[in-house]
Image (cartoon, rainbow over all chains, first blue to last red; front, side, top):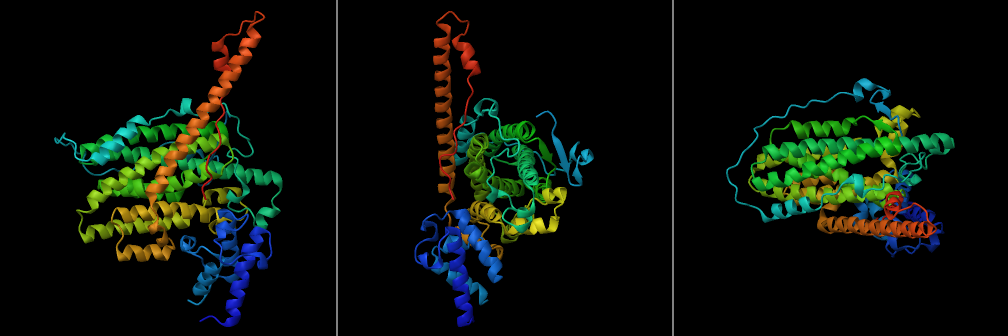
Length: 85
Length: 398
């Protein structure tokens, strides 16, 4: 189980990593849009965000994760699940 | 380029490991069949395509195109595996150029050696596969692979100027694939696993490099490779319906081991040991890099659906793929990807021919205007002088 604080840290880290690639603020990231539909996002940028999240949270995000994870909210859920293993 | 710098496993200039030959014992009988009636419409159709879609790198590609000697592929920084790291940030510009050239050289050297491996394997398949339809098809693949070896060798010699020896991971996989006397193991290793590696690598070259010669070259090669993979799947699907669980398990173990090697060990180790910036740090950076993740996505999005389609997809196999973090790619439809590969190659060819025609028309127009006052130019002269430019990729797929 991940604590409430841990969940909040995960969410903040994931959203910040996505926002950094978009050169925007976390508040501007629409959590429910497909990440590749976010304005200015390209697949390699998304992979850079994934690498940042892995490093910041010490978690492994599988290569096939982005085949099932589409939105930023889903990525938060996925990383939370990985951290609670 | 007149002199090609050679880089072996022990560093630059070790000619002993780069010259000569590598012998691998090839077991098993050469099989004749007296059954000349055709058995498989699918294989015959692929054979027909193989015959019809031969192309000659000598004339199809614009070898007159001059690449940037410091960046011969037009490689965006995102595809330098150590780019974006503090180590990369510390490197002076001149040293980054060295990394760029060596990365291009290592990649194209592995493509070259892999294509030679495919040439040898396809020739072995001609001998060992029992069905005549499969022998027919494999014979077209032999020619395909020879053309690819010719072209990658020329690209390395004329455009990049550095050649690496074969990487240990690729050599290991080739060794197992060629050495085994059973034809289906050779197919599995070459047509599914090594061809998967080729499809992933060449598609990245086609879609992301900015040099038009590199784009076009790899698009044409990919069109051939898509046929080879389809052939492997048709033949293996038939074969693996006939095997026992024990025999299938043995094939799965081979495939799992190869997948791990491709995932963990195809990271340019020889580059980092040659350049000596701290090899272990560079290898670790390469494994984590977005470019390597992109490569793995493309690699396993080709390999995993192929394994599924040939019935090497037991619960044990799926568990191994899950541990590798690639099982999710099993849901993808590779037929769509292959169709797209063909479409892109045809589109590039169409644009290229249009560009050639335009340049020739322009040259002829100039010729006419210059010959009117009594010059010596002829249409033929200008045709031979017109430079041919290759148009860039039409679709930068993700």
